[in-house]
Image (cartoon, rainbow, N blue to C red; front, side, top):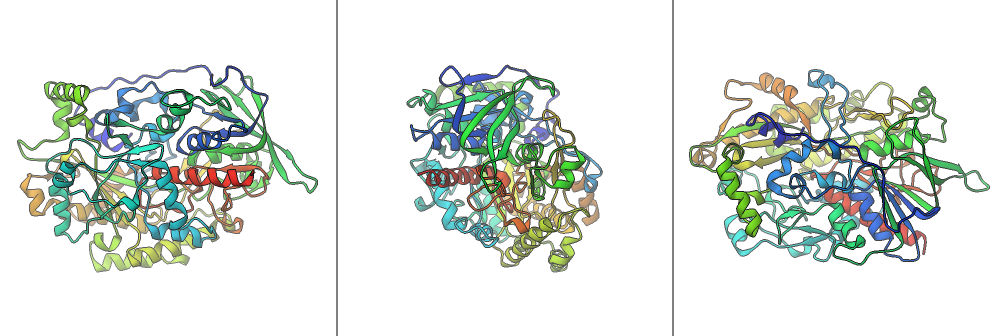
Length: 628
């Protein structure tokens, strides 16, 4: 369950949950072709971007297959005020639960992932950011030429259609920006909420007193505090997801329909069909097998592909499909009775996520805050009227206040900082991996640790993200640049069974130390004159929880996900546990690529949607150039 949904449930008694099962639906030309030039598996930010860009060439045919449905533009999806409830729209999720986490009091953690056309971009908090330049330099240094900052940032700008802040927002919110950091002609509209809590400026001033710089424009460098743009249509203050940005325009909604693309929703790809494709024995994908009925015994349909298959299922579903198709660690596959097609140990390994601990706060009487909206139906109705009449008021507020903080800004003491850096030693870090980690995966992890430690020392990556929600009602302290690594493994050959997802949160001690330091830093923020001006007090964990040991226990009890899993099909050299090369082609398969967040070798100091759009825009150009 999402951070804000968890906090909101503290204030309300019950919320309706709707679930549905729909039949497969073909959107396009009325009948499925026998074969396509490109078949894309998954309709999230990666897959939907690719489908749009590849079908720009009218001489090729494109099929996109999405396991989930089309959404109906529900208010929980479209309207910022209702966004927290999108986490409860179960018909649009995979309903994933991690295995019990040993460092989190053996709790499983709900890991919502979008299962609809639009993917996570339809149910997330809409933040549009990219990451720190040094992190992409590390991507390139791992053996991925062309994936440094200069290689990836232009593709973010290609995706973006930015609306600068208004004169009022510039003054009231102290928003700063630089046009060179943004794109203005892309598909994904980005802009700022029309309404802000008036105390938001005090939040930033409080961080000023703690020595936190202000990021001039987070799309060039996110380190510091800032008011973030969101993926929203500035004119009507509603979400713009991958479906609205890349699907609607090519299916007759605000654009010209394309005859060369088909989309199937409510249809799950169950297997990649492969055969020896050349005289030298190279493996090639010849088609995909799919079924709309959620049963291992359901009838399957096979669709042939002539050029390339591209998997864009995200960091959980992509490695699951690869492994079920025979691409993965041979030991894992054989244990499930799956025939090994390509022995590729990195598939499903190297799982990384941003974990975070939320704190509920309360502000003084008369200070506007989010619980007012949930507990005062008259106020909420008035704000709804404002939204529907002129797209103003509280319903437009999307949670704009972010700070990405280098660890040297957050560490509680020199002693703890020295302990954290010592535990980041490469040899020491390797001991925290699972005992059965393949040597190739361990080699890639060693390179990641070296890079993260160096950036931590230099202050060029964030150690923490601090998110200020609801005018102080909730603050989420999210770990950036984690060192813990986990796995995604099928537990059966049945494709309709969710895999075992084990992020292994906080199994590297540096992660827990930094999460506790983030709690201590938040208390310093509460104590600033600016926060005392609005009467901010800590409700959870509360003033009775004192000392490092008690705060650590609190973190273990509440830590959850920020829904940013990456790394399970990592873009790394094969000898370093890589799954795809710099052109995003899967090692050992002639015509198979992965284009989604799973290819990120390490996490970035950002929410991952913007980076995924950039990856997909770049991938589209790579694929087009291959087939000129």
